[in-house]
Amino acid sequence: MATNQDAFDEARQFIAGGVNSPVRAFRAVGETPVFFAAGFGSRVTDIEGHEYIDYVGSWGPHILGHAPEAVITAITRAAKASTSFGAPTVSETTLAKLICESLNGCERIRLTSSGTEATMSALRVARGFTGRKLVVKFAGCYHGHVDSLLVSAGSGALTLGNPDSAGVSPAVAAETIVVPYNDVAAVERAFAQYGADIACTILEPVAGNMGVVLPTRGYLESLAAITHEAGSLLIVDEVMTGFRVAWGGAQRLFDIQPDLTVLGKVIGGGMPLAAFGGRADIMAVIAPDGPVYQAGTLSGNPVAVSAGLAALTQLKNTPAIYRRLEVLSARLAAGLQESAERHRIPLYIARCGSMLTPFFQQGPVRDLEGAKRSDTAQFARFHTLMRGLGVYLPPSQFEAWFVSNAHTFKDIDTTLAAADAAFAQLNK
Ligand SMILES: *Cc1c(COP(=O)(O)O)cnc(C)c1O
Image (tube, rainbow, N blue to C red):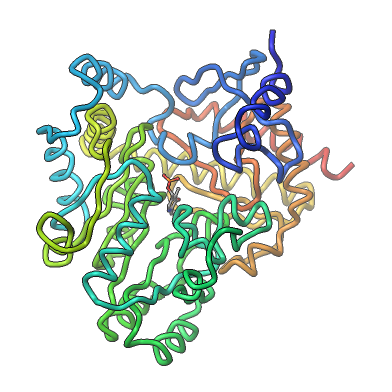
């Protein structure tokens, strides 16, 4: 039987770095990546036959756990009626209507295949609509690997220690103004200096790609006010938070009015699907109605749309899911905190609904600088120990853990027992 190491060695011969997305290589924790064979509910099994309780959830999409019946049934039915037409289908409109009705002030959307494409397109629309070129982003926020947004980005870019990617031209990077998260004065200064040239402010309303970092009280409202005052657009990147932290996402939870919203992950039910949308007058700049070009051979793919529709329908019809996720996640966070304290390990847990990050430090963590104060070496040891105890965690301090509706109270308690044993080992 092939081991994870064998599989990785072979993959490295044909795939750049052996993986199709950098964090999968497990560099930050110094381990061999896991090659998976199957997943069901809260559990995943690797090719060596080890079973794990999964808190990665494909990096966020699996809010219902792996292979939920409704989603698999919908995918199967859709695939049998052809996997792609490259032409409109009625379910795209059904999904679009469901999404528009659940967000604040979103009248039209466009579907794409990845979050990266969606944020890239939203920026182009903001620039096309305002006729301006600059973008304000926040250090540690990740918006996919869009050239102009790979400046002080989070997620893999942060983990690998090269936040500014090679291959991004300085001219493109110069169109992005980076300010610290949760710092209103810094945004005011940026707008005082460049206001008339700023097309948009883009942010994660709850950051998840430098680890989870919550917006401080009034921060989102202030950003919206400053941005709108200057005639710029507010783009809320809810690729991670959308339908994860609440039905309708962080914008419903914190009651903010974005001009454009970007979605991905949960809305695709585990298939490649993302979206961006907003006010009708803004979205009207997109071709064929307007001059901003945006397209995709597989955009609105019927199989992906069927998966997204099945997942969102289940979430919409069962509001109790969000309440259950809150209870499970609160129990996990409280248990970890208590256990870490018992073993005298500094741990600061940031959580919004079912996304959380235990930072190995005292905290509080309000921005990228704060997140970086974590003891990443201790996190790496913890990750390896937890993996050995059957718990699969994101392989970096700077990622969010995701709880799904397939997790049981027993899963949480098993995880807490493993964490307690791991914390005890860390002290040895
Ligand atoms: C994951 C993510 C993206 C990128 O989405 P992909 O589908 O990986 O391209 C963009 N923004 C945020 C906030 C994300 O979490």
